Structure formats: C-alpha cells, structure tokens
Image (tube, rainbow over all chains, first blue to last red; front, side, top):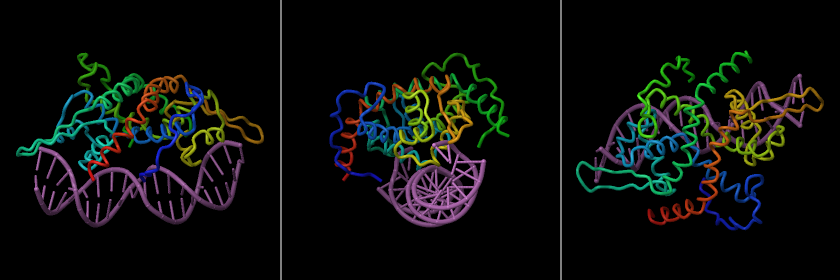
Length: 138
Length: 138
DNA sequence: CCGAATCCTCATTGATACTG
DNA sequence: CAGTATCAATGAGGATTCGG
C-alpha cells in the first residue's frame, strides 16, 4: 500500500491554492496525508499525548479506553514514522518506553485543538440531528 | 453501536476541562464523535463542500477523486444524518440533488481548516520523517 | 442523473499466546 | 513492562447491475 513513487513537482503551481482551488497534485498529497492523520486512534493518541507531555505504553493504553495493544503499537509506530512523536527506550528492568510528541506532533495537536473543542461544543447538536433524521426517515 | 443513554451531566465538572483533564463521560462521547468525524471521506467531502457552497452528486464525485459512488452515497447519508449537510431533491427530469453544508457543517469545516493548512504546510516534513525512519530501521 | 442493491474480496482488527 | 507473532472473523469498500 505504500507506493514509493518519487514525489515530483509538489510545489510548482502558479500560486492559486489560497482557499478556492488547489493544485491537483498538492491536493492529492494533502488528501493522502489527511487520510493517514484522520484516523480515530491517531487523533485520540494525539489528544492524550497533547495533554500528558510524556507517557509510557501502559499509561497510554489506559488513557485510550477502547484500544487493543496491537492497535496502540501500530498507531504509535505510524506516528513515530511520520515524525509525530519520539519513542525512548530505557535500558532498565522492567523495560520502560516513553512516548512524547515532537514539535511536529504538537503542531498537529494544536491544529486539531479546534476540532476537539468543536466536538465538545456540538455533541448535543449532532445527537439531536441524528434523532430527527432517524425519526423522520422511519 | 449507538447507545441511547441519556447524556446526563455533560457539563457539570468543576471546570477543569480546559486542556488538561476531561470528564470521562464527555471524553467518551467526544471520542465517539471524533471517530465518526475523523473519516477520510467525510473530511474530504467536507472540504470540497466548504469550497463550493452547493454541489450535485456527480459534481461531488468529480471533486473527490478516489471515491466510489457507494462510499460517496454512504458518506453523504452519514453527514446528512449528523446534521452536517442538507440534501435537496429537485423533482425534475433528469433528477437533480443538491448538497449544501448546514451551519453546523460549516462550523466543523472552519474547525478543520487549520488541519488542512497544517497538512499543506507540513507535507514535506512528514515525508522527510518517513524517509529517515524507513532508512534507519532497515 | 441519482442512488439502492447485490456480490465478492482482502484489509483491518481483536483474541490469544509467546519473548526479551 | 513492552512488545511481536499468529490466526480467525468482521466488515469496509470496489465493481456491477438495476430502478425511479
């Protein structure tokens, strides 16, 4: 699934990507990135790490209720690969691994902050909309 | 999957949910909502409709390159159910259906705006991080 | 033109067990 | 404690077809 195509010409459009139209190539790349970032677990891990500065594996697991260790590991690896967080292994026994957001991760966290706030503020509105919809369609 | 529990006490904590800790109940609901909103297609459709005011089905399909009609229909239905957009059927032939963001949808679009900007601005950084990671782990 | 319905595939995820 | 490995099942998602 990981296409190692060289990413040529990521930034050579005429400058019309302010808000309306976007260069198709950049748009595709952005959508691709969005696709990876817009993952449920990624967002939640990001949120948790954004709040807690530094956490160990099990602490992280406790703070992300529904997740399995497999998904947690996988999500953490992806985020590490994308430069969102650092993974520090302490050579002690019992083993200890600390996860901490990088500046890049923090910046994404800041960007998502408004989404979290939106979610908190509009929970009931969405729920009402759903009830209306389900009631009407029936 | 949809627990119809009454949403009691959505806002009765001591006021400590500014950034650090969040009420577990609210947190669970927010995470749930995030889980639905943090969908690749949802985000992209939201972005497209945020730019184009009002679009018809096929126009929408053209503006969301990789999507299948099935996923588009499905995504649109979910978003309609969540109150993100309105679906207007014009009784003409050939049929014509217009999709348009509601105020709620627009507000989510505004919240996600910073994420799109982040993605545009940090594409290369993520790509570099990936190359480093893949090179180092090998 | 819009979209529902069917079928089919393979990728994601969870459970479980095992290691350093 | 912090993972890795394996297996099985669910379901997301694509291709196609039909209907209004």
